[in-house]
Image (tube, rainbow, N blue to C red; front, side, top):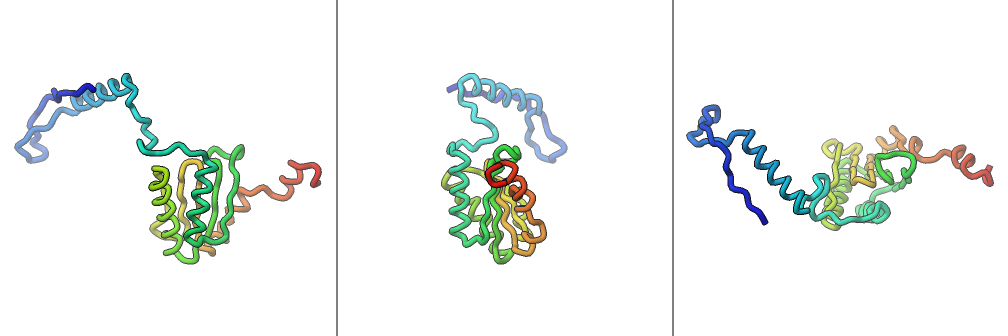
Length: 175
């Protein structure tokens, strides 16, 4: 393993008011670029978008983990929608309800914690502060947790689920 000596040029930093010195930005960037280049050549560069401990699981396994977590936390009216071939935002969408803002936030927080613990999967979350509608993006599965009134207002299921007319045209035997 190679190690890099810091050969950055130091200059006094009057703006910070400290007596110490700061390395020049260009020198620091050059050292970082050299370190990344060496790591890439030795094959030790980890992809920037994945956690080093993230386990490789299929979208179906992730969906099962999400559904189990929601069920454990007493989420209500759980609906799963297959998005494969319809959208590039993910393979599945899950919509569910919590009875209160507090429960909606808790369901979302527990789901994120469980996915992080079990799979090393870091999820992104939006809306947890208000607790009316929380979106959790796990990558392959997008989860919406609503309060019942907010869910009724937005009706995401109607937007994403196939309608009866679409199902009939896809399957001529049912028409």
